[in-house]
Length: 223
Image (tube, one colour):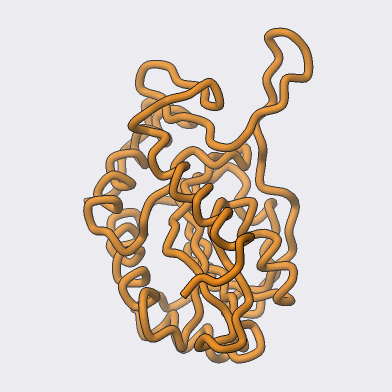
């Protein structure tokens, strides 16, 4: 179903990143009780390794509020890419993301960003209705966001999510189900298969590890 070599390459990169926590390489930074940094690092100078960050963005959420990196300042967040009319993996992704959200919805240190890859159909009212049907009544913590299609697709690659245009597919695109865990500095620290409950269980185990790293000693998620 995934036709182009570009998409297959990006899908392979995302799959490899999903395996990184189990088999560390020189492209990650790992210490006790810390998650790896994912992505290809730059060595600016001996002993000075710079890990990639999510670039600046300007998006619009379901409440018609602009979302930028400043919106998420000081937060750990989980990002994914979906579309509301997706007949295949998106309902499962949303169900699994909702499971994480329910555990952390009262924790101001944690945010969620779901990017539509079909902005022509997924207008703000459509995104708002979709969010509310999931039980997310406002965008205070979980942002369902839109932007021009090219902007979203470029951003997807930075999160190591595989997204590609496909006029023959529903919504005009195909994608994988990656969930990206991002730290307060914009580094991707975990990648998970959002349609696999065991992978999402791993995300639920990794989230408090990252929270302890960025805010040591603070309370864990509300029960």
